[in-house]
Length: 336
View (cartoon, rainbow, N blue to C red):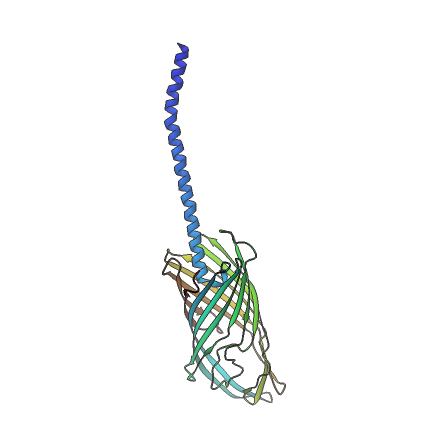
């Protein structure tokens, strides 16, 4: 009888435990599904942040091997300044005059990027510049300085980790040079010299934002064999020296359709030495330029984000403000 009692006790105990085990197992499955859904949601949010960031800051993004992209951007900037006209004769200053200046610049740019490798992208930028000086009533329509870039990621990108991009630039002097025109009758659209530069960019997703920053250095090649009339002298050579630049900011996704990016940039330009045919030299002082920009991204489709930007000059040598808009262009021959 004890044997039948023990068997009955075991059966009753087992029947009581099975529902509990089933409930526990079901609860574990539900928890696992919830955790998995949460991880997938986090991954989608991080990916969305990356898309927003790369659309706003093209210098931090790369193309996949064999893929390409074409982008159009329009930028407007306004610079109000005062020009100091003077002549130095035998150590004395003559014909001193302070002339107000107000320049409106409109730049239409087409940028093309191509992925040579998954971690190496090359590109070019072609600007079309329109300038108008309201004070002297001068205007010009011409090409700006065409530039070429290369961006390389030495380490494979891992979601959630710091991303490092090294870049190099070559800027030509295809624009109208300020050292080859009549400064009283014409405007320029370019720098007037070649320049080469390089630097590094860092970015990291810190949900719900992406933080980024970059540093770069530029060497400007001297412009020689010039024949520009400057007062009673003839300008022969310009040595613009070097430049340093740093920037930092963050991008934030307000929603799936709207995103915001804010950044600040600080640039240093070395002294520019002007050499004349009679052996005289003039030195333009170095400059420190600060600029803050805000970009608003609007998603108009699953793969297209249009960015509008507003920039404010923080130093005397920077433009007073700027406005811009950029968007990708898709042609049938360029679609991936």
